[in-house]
Length: 53
Image (cartoon, rainbow, N blue to C red; front, side, top):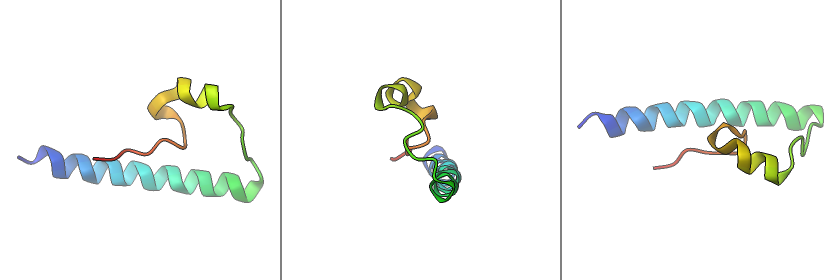
């Protein structure tokens, strides 16, 4: 009953953090730090991964 709203709030928070980290990396010029194969291997730990429901 309360699991989905709580999960959504957590996912939104995590996605905002990842957006901020990715934005800072772009401002520093750190683009394409990982290959697409490395990103796939990282799974949900990759910075470009976004949680959705």
